[in-house]
Length: 356
Ligand code: GLY
Ligand code: MN
Ligand code: MN
Image (tube, rainbow, N blue to C red):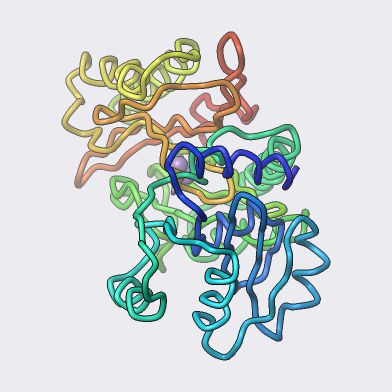
């Protein structure tokens, strides 16, 4: 698997006329090498693949990154990297421009004299955009854990419990059921707070006659899942029911309409046109969805700005919402994988309005 990924990077070296690619993004490092440690640098030339890391990780790197030559770098990593660059005859060195600070870049200019530094963008991220069967298996597992946690939490939600306690319970449950961690900071937003699209769990207590939006995910073998459900405690008014129904219609219509070859903008419109058609367009102020995998937000987007094209193997979310300040909000988020002919929805959790 790592050998295939390496081959794909090497094709890019040829296309871009580079002698080597220098990788500093931690997710890209993990994807390419299999090494899960927190520190390391990857250098790929047409013939060689090197993983530089420090004393803490040398043995682990040798164990995990079998397709790479492991170099335990000097106290100053740049010294070891320069040595390799020079001995391999690298003149044009691609670096990941979205992952290098100004300080690091000016440092490379000084530390790598005579080397042409060439900014590159999303070389590895594009490969990561198409998931293989092993990655899909991890994502399916993360989804399963997340859905179990949703089932579990329904028995716990009641007036008087704090949003923070709900998030702690969700995260504990996911850990107990095989997750290494949560995929991101859990959102529990109740009452008026449910109008905050990213309302992290607070000390607010759940109360009767309010929406509760739960947005959470698991990380399994490094891969994320991403689920949102909005439930109601008490007795919903017609207004509550109406916005829920519209968001659900937008969610379902999108999942029914997405297919390979469609642009991110066209996908976004599937939901946005429905919400806008009911007069709530102004209350849906974020994009419809995003790719995820090792990271919870990966570059491909479903949004009005997105010209990305859906391709088989992409894994993304659909998360329409309506957020009304002072009243509350609803978001319903599912994950899907693009297939050759359409999409497969990964979530099975109930999405009819659950009233507790
Ligand atoms: N809370 C992160 C997301 O759903 O995108
Ligand atoms: Mn989410
Ligand atoms: Mn999401």
